[in-house]
Image 1 (cartoon, each protein chain N blue to C red):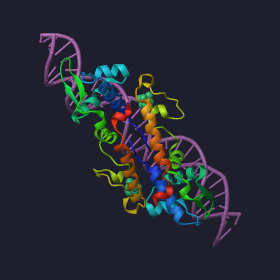
Image 2: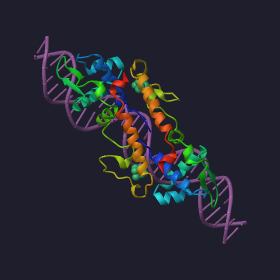
Image 3: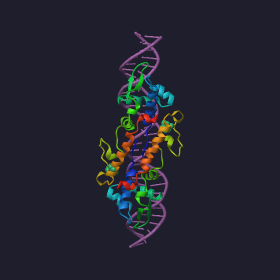
Image 4: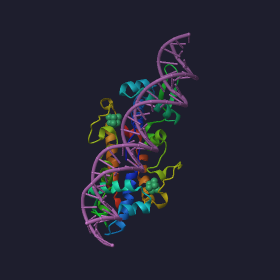
Amino acid sequence: MVRFSKKIEYSLIALRYISNAKDEIITAKEISGKYNIPYELLAKILQKLKKENILVSNQGVNGGYKLSKPLNEISLSELIDKIEGKSGIVECLHTDNLTECFIYDSCSIKDPINKMQLELENLLKNKMVSDFI
Amino acid sequence: MVRFSKKIEYSLIALRYISNAKDEIITAKEISGKYNIPYELLAKILQKLKKENILVSNQGVNGGYKLSKPLNEISLSELIDKIEGKSGIVECLHTDNLTECFIYDSCSIKDPINKMQLELENLLKNKMVSDFI
DNA sequence: TTAAAACTGGACTAATATAGTCGTATTTAA
DNA sequence: TTAAATACGACTATATTAGTCCAGTTTTAA
Ligand code: SF4
Ligand code: SF4
């Protein structure tokens, strides 16, 4: 029910490492090697973080990644939304609500579930990636 | 990353309904019908809740379920643990740690992840099933 | 006594989400 | 021109969740 995906864990490990390296440019290979994270998977994640403007990248020889902003400006909430795509704690609270819950009309717990979501969001918004160091 | 399973949602709907019926005995069929919840699945869930001492049951004709204790004495945390089995937010925090994370030794975020888990647990412990009414 | 209404229990399948892999293209410094 | 790196898309494998099926047992009431 509450579970960090490997993508999020690998993101945190990578961001932490890149942050500690200050302005040095870090490659996917380096992080993959240090932490035994599958290279292809980590590479995908870093590409995604770049596309989401959390990292900036340089291609080619001597290329790699560095932070686009300090980690205390990135909330866990933001990281999760950007890596996994924004999503609600239940079907009917997804923003892109293509698949409406087949129970929706008769459901008696929509309101309290909604409140619950807000409380969880609040916790994740106030937790910064820098707290994972 | 933070997602209620259908089992939990169906549990909440059912517990709410049974609670509102006061001391009347409620059948799986009745709840299934009112809320369009797949009967076999709901039946399994109620059986589990009975086994976990949240419900008490009567078999046979006119049988059914009622609460073994009021909903304000059951935390969301307890419900989740009993329905889904207790589990950590990441592999290495599972209590029955059969499968150790293959990154464990080199992992740099174990401690902060642990703290995060405590904060989430705290939220879920202070949320009672009665809050979902 | 028997039939129907309910719970019980286990195995099974289907659907979905997560994790990881592969191949190929592009960029760039040396 | 080559090697080291990011970039992208499709693919496969694995795990989890959701739902189904079937064969019981218990109990009440006709
Ligand atoms: S309608 Fe009710 S059961 Fe369906 S997803 Fe929303 S809260 Fe859950
Ligand atoms: S060891 Fe690190 S990567 Fe592995 S499960 Fe624990 S926190 Fe996550």
